[in-house]
Length: 314
Length: 179
Image (tube, rainbow over the protein chains, first blue to last red):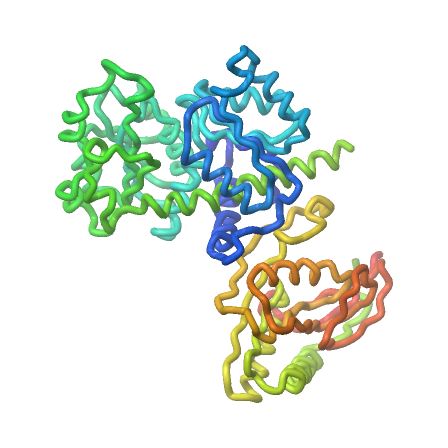
């Protein structure tokens, strides 16, 4: 397989083979982080710019660590302290970063489609680190990578995605990725948090967490995003926990080795109990570790594709 | 490309590896602190075979590691077909060891340069030695092998194909020529 994409915008546009190629490349990168010297020279001399229009610590740090372990130089731009505050447009910011001879922009933006728009306007690579409610491809890739590592294969797995499906780019990217690889996905949430027409994405809808846990090989519990949309869409937090919170008692009725994932940061006592978050079924911290390998793979593939691209047009 | 000549056949390869195994043991005075690291992909098969030969002589196992040098290449952007990154598996300490790097063909020396950089990121071996099945000349860097199966003078338009049973179904070394 040859990787020709300079950008990674979402899993919707990727083929099954492309997703599998990223995952197998990530497998090779995982070992690098276990070395005493956790660094390889593959992206030496490349510049990666983290451009974050939304607060994020874990995704940004994960990308930063990944880029540094590949020997790239990393620049972080938090838009609260940049000229975006002075009214600069996204495209202008992008072309300015390109003019610095940077090689890759990793962008988080609160508008769906922002990464795609930027990618179209620039020659350098754009990696989508989350755009609005649309996609968060590297999060889904690391979730799938972790599942594959734990359970061997994705094809035929039953995966439950629990939580605010309507406002979750993590859910959307996971659904695209998992269904392409042959998993059976059930989304589980209160009615108000399930978007209309979600069945067209080839998923089942359930409003009963116990029923989902009983069947599932793995559940991915999403963060309830109270900071995103305060107000009427959400039932009271305690009420949510009572109806949908993943507790030890609920989990005990599922498969013994059911995998519990969470993209973090966890609201303990809202999405799941502390006992579950820290329990034997939880792979939450392994997800964090795997996130580095997946992002190293994505950065490496994007940089190589662009190098090739430049050579061809020279 | 078409086949010009078979340089080594199955028996030749086996004899050459036995000889190199003896030479490695002679130079390192036994297996104390000795380990092998094969460069993906065919170097790995050769390293495993050398370890078998050494086991046959010394009745003891020596550690064998696998090195993928893709991330250390200096020509990542020059090669048309994209190299696929594979795992490096060196599951032993290399500090203070006598380490023999194993590859199939020694040509420009750039692969070995990359392998040396990679190894040094893993620790500080006492020595790093180089064993190759074929040395075809045309070095671009000041690198030489300590153990050579066969020196084969080639022109730059020729290539050497090492075929090994583990990967290719049979053992032979062939000179290929541009048609």
